[in-house]
Image (cartoon, rainbow, N blue to C red; front, side):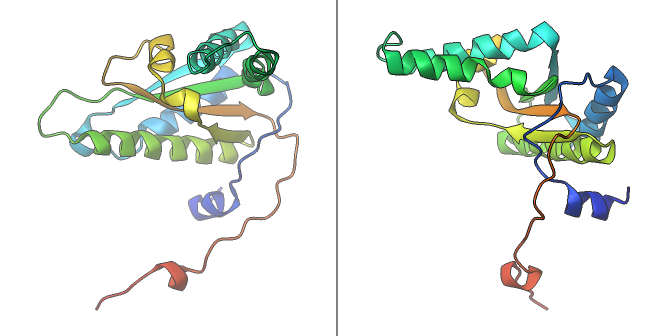
Length: 189
């Protein structure tokens, strides 16, 4: 698949089949992420692959992160919220947890480390699409908690940057629209 075609046709696929995804395809997706640009060649990205019962790790972390924000987790409403969030990791057969560990170097700017991590995610989403897989990059408040960082063994400077849910598509996304280039671009000559 041509890269421009992949960019224009990739969509977030939130509904996927339960069929297992071969590890070789997951390795190819992760390798695509490692080719993202990064200043000073720091390669700050980290990846954790969850499949099968391994998804329990994310379920437990999501519950713990949400629970830490609740005054009383035992109310009926909060129990339902906890139950709902605990099921999220089982929506796809594979989840890649993406993280960044910033480099200890005065020349390295922290924001650039995260930009590199996000570029890696885009490469991974494009690779999944090119391989015929559906993927969606999920974030949300629980992602940005120390609870989540600790669950995935990150240092005080590290952070989880997203969850890429991957599987074989079980939906056909609607065509996307984007603003015209002239609408969002200024040219100075």
